[in-house]
Image 1 (cartoon, rainbow, N blue to C red):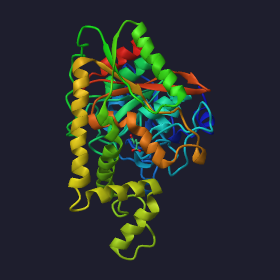
Image 2 (image 1 turned 90 degrees about the horizontal axis):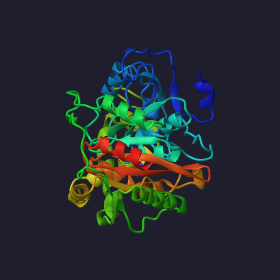
Image 3 (image 1 turned 180 degrees about the horizontal axis):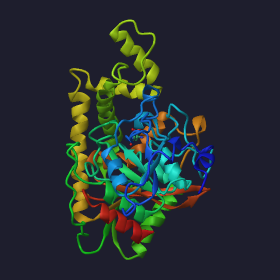
Image 4 (image 1 turned 90 degrees about the vertical axis):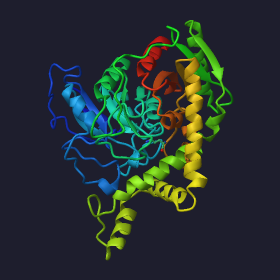
Length: 427
Ligand code: GLN
């Protein structure tokens, strides 16, 4: 037995850890007795559900998310809730209201985010796998920063009942682990249609097959603005795919130039609506100062939300204000449709699309790292899979300067099995 709490002291991957709360419910299940962490925006009965926000600091979940229910039915045991950027908004986990997480490879560096706690917990061997959520890269980018696998499934493949909403047309629950087979196994357990989430889909029983009997690849080419370490890892991966005899061709995707403004328009618009429920009245933090209902709401929200969350609510409210929807939100949705068309075309001629996970390796905490704005711009390789709803897998490809290098594989809807096959082939 490892002393998880002692080991986590200077990593801070868990916001709450208690391996006595839950018992294995199925000793014969495919995940029997496997401990796991769950991001703190996914409901686990009897554990806190804070979203790393002061506004939900004392909230304890009275029920399990469907994904957690399915894990328990398969025998897995939830041991704790993992740290994150407040409400999933960020790329470092430093935007947690309860203090950030340190990268287990080097504590001066961030884990990435927003599922940084989940990524660090598996990278530090505190749990064999963890659940995360991915709205714009929040599973894949921290997985790349911490040197683990991170699967963002097809939109709707995993029920979101019990996931606290950030941006509803983009959010998905997924898996982080050091073990590729375990990542796949967990995905198979948690996926499937759920009447409690009307956006969930009936996942096909039959695994997808490569178009021509053998996997074929496309990679993103052009000036991608990568650091030398990421550039080196990316080129090496492409070479490896070639060396193994797979068909691979380069493509430019001009619409990718617009994905950041499109993503941040749609994500903040939806977030501003979803976060309206935190009003200090139904549950969560309530200000002691309020004199009228309006005043109470205003003060509760002002005290409960962190700066980054406030910024996004403001942005979202701005792009949705009356008379301006055409200019921002609707325009963003049109470009989103174009991006979807472009990726459908890519997957009509190849099975797997290859791109970096992030333009750089993990960056340092604080001022020595990336500004909040630079972090947003750097989401350019991850947000596409959320805009299209297609699945993507972050894979660790090596180490540079003592920190992991991660790459990304994308596939068409419900072709997760091809992502796992491709990862096995190219590593
Ligand atoms: N960095 C992205 C954002 O801040 C990722 C968010 C996510 O996937 N939850 O919105």
